[in-house]
Image 1 (tube, rainbow, N blue to C red):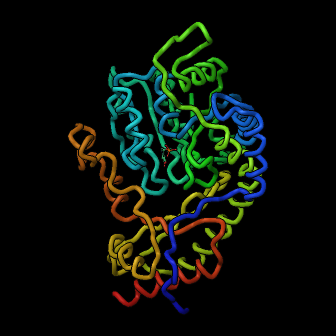
Image 2: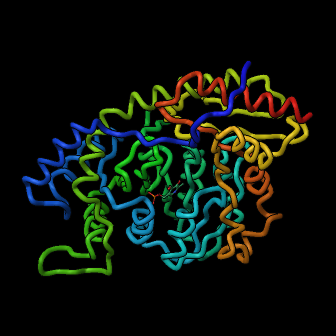
Image 3: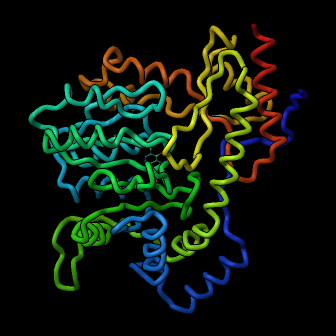
Length: 379
Ligand SMILES: Cc1ncc(COP(=O)(O)O)c(C=O)c1O
């Protein structure tokens, strides 16, 4: 197969965009209303539509997923120590640190890259208040095992579901597990509001608190009950979200096709492992990641990453460096490299390749040919 250098940079993703005329119509409605923020009609409509789409009992939107996570810790009154994964984006762990909570890192599973429930109990102390797992790359965690552990020890479960928009486990939405789930609507996600995020709750009271906390702790005109922040989504962003909700299922369908093509084309490439779908899971295909085995492939993950750039392909080392190796966390006892062998290994060998709904099959074919050619010529 021919392997051609892309003439323009080929990035890891490209945002899903609403039709320009449709967004202009929505903006006209917002302009006419003279309300640009502060829980306006667009935000209310978006929350209603998202609750239906995600099958969530209660849902609130925020200016971004990070603020949403920080506030979820407050809503659940977390303190002391929270057990989480090092194989995640910085925001997960930072949300704990911003709440003066000590992150306790737990190693991950080799295949799913998610928190390994078998190692959680050994990390529980009298200061532990919660478990904060991440559905990494949209693959759901072992939710049942995690809940059993939480119930046994009286812990809360706060899911970072930033990647898991629309994911279901045996017909149940991911948001139905744990106490609160957070979804990120950043422009790089499959569904977005440019910047934004949401929390889903089973309890109406949590939504009330969330809405007050995202608006400076203002309960009503006469009462400010706690030190909230400014975590509001504005009307224009909500309008983008309303329009993209109509497109997201097609986006996921196209990503599923591309993922299938990548898997087929890379299947017999020595040293490259792709993921597989597990029965009973409705996936959303947010990333396409491979594992690179230097001995078999000839190049390390880092070398492949550098080589791909020569072909104008910009892959991403997700998640590298590991959160437990950040300067601000590496001195924690749980961050010791020898305690997190799987996470440290995975962070060195995983590479996310470009994936978005506008990619052509010929783009995928070219990327796979390049990967195959680079590998075979270096052995
Ligand atoms: C796993 C994870 N958690 C949290 C976040 C933070 O979300 P946001 O960018 O919306 O603040 C992101 C993405 O950016 C993420 O990938």
